[in-house]
Image (cartoon, rainbow, N blue to C red; front, side):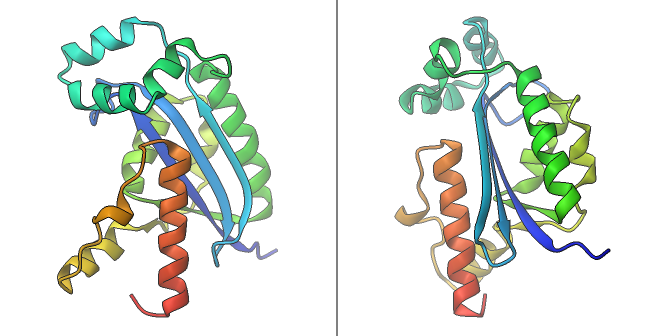
Length: 185
């Protein structure tokens, strides 16, 4: 049986850039058709204790802490009512991936998608379904580098987000649909 191809848009917000020294604060996933039509969505804020701040500072991650303090994510991960543990996030994501991989071939998509996949596979080791994703990936960084080569500014004001997964995923999906509608890169 030939399964349809779909895009699995991923984004993580973290306490730094190094997955060996940081922690995931938030995970977001959107499942779309290849034309960018949304089929499903899942996100979670990961619960942490206050020690995360000291650890992040000790690892030189002031920038990430400041950014996620301003956007409220750090405080939500410490004090929020709807936060879940990384083990619960791993279970929930695994359940979604199990369902989605049965119906389609999933191609990871997003900005710097290898960054997100590295964090997810490292920090959610119980989510073995990540291995079932296609090796073919859609990384919007390639689109943006082409824009730079043309003398355009793909990182201007329209690119800015709150650095929350919903905003970053929406920006990426809108950019993809715009490029798709133009018919050229």
